[in-house]
Image (cartoon, rainbow, N blue to C red; front, side, top):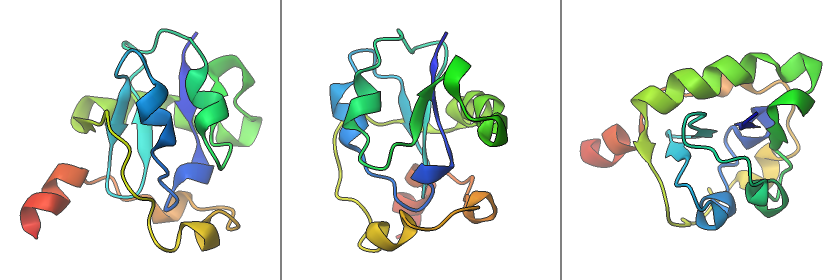
Length: 117
């Protein structure tokens, strides 16, 4: 089993979870984080660290969020490793209250964003 980042993270992108991950399993996109399933050691430390409750054990991912299992695996292959906490987006509080955010997911890497600026 692995852990999975789900929809609540989109546009919230709190990074508290990456600092507690002993396996360096998190990967970063512009407005979302994912867990690389091949690196996750199933420790569950990230679950309690996530302030928006976006992380679930794979077996516990809500039915309407099951697509995020494959999405984490796919994006983890393309996105860069993140191991240090960064400030959350200024509007993260607003986005934490929004549902049905999949359409807002930006699949570009955060590294491309940083090199573009």
